[in-house]
Image 1 (cartoon, rainbow, N blue to C red):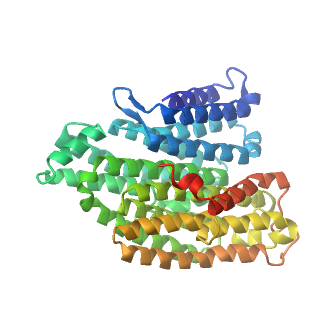
Image 2: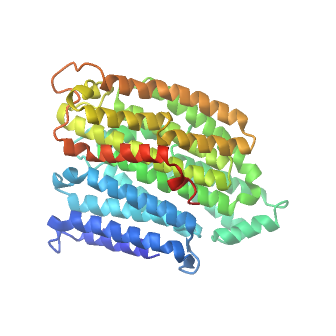
Image 3: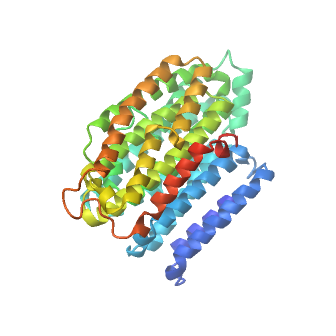
Length: 458
């Protein structure tokens, strides 16, 4: 609870920083605010409870996922320091980032559908604005428009589904809805299940699950690179924590109705994302389709709900967020010099910055699921959880998709170790620009060597 309050205060302070002449120290204040919020979140581990008339629930699930989001945002803030210094609208950017994080935390702590919707919309509207924040770039404007239109469309499905659920149960409280489904398992009205499907469709848009993913490559490609990094890490964590909490806490009684849908979505998403990524020449678009593919892997946790899948989802989100932040950090640094976001932009990186090339390789290996990096154990845990639910066919598709993914991840690695074509190809202005790449790579390697650091938290 204190976490949400702290983040809200920091967001409001950032929004009013120019009025109170705090602009010069706003970066430090936001970092301090995030650290305080993280402290409150960790402290909640021993203070579980409900707040706001049982609309917000603090438990181990919300504490772990909220803490992961805050830590990831701290890494993102360190990565984007120069970006904020060069922006004339830095106060607004600070506020939008913190408000987006606040919405994400609400999405992990809700115990009422209205809080779910409120948190999701706070997050979404912040992202709509940030996606179009590069006002001189028509691709950024296009990304914001597409994101807003598709996001609004998805919200319509979500609200319609929530309305149908309320019509059947007369409640927005997820525990009361769960009790209703338990008591009326064999006599649920047909429109209740229609409501569940509409919620599923609406949230599938939000997590970029195929075939509802068509907005993702254009939005990821058009948005400023650092905003895309935030979307691929923090937003991913919030979205999957929300959808897992909702379906496992609220609709677990009828899991045999929705788990097959998630299994099919998972298979389609993995194949669509990986196959399409193979044909990309832009590193940024490749990472966008890669994000779709990773959403497919994470959907396996919903196709096989349980303690094992919950821990697997947490570990996978941590591993993917680290590697995604590292990759986008390098792309941002290289783009500042070369003006290029293609795979060729990193060609010859090893000959300019060998340490950076090695760090990039670790991040790519983690995304590909190659041992001993964290991504391997993320996939291993998800595949094991799916096998426990007799989803052998889904695991086989996931393995095939992973093999496809190895191809395009290794294209980036090979390019980094090839001879450069021009003098500035793969060159980064300062080694300090890639500090976050190093942190992400080291943490990915650490989690691969000692996965128990995260894997047993839930």
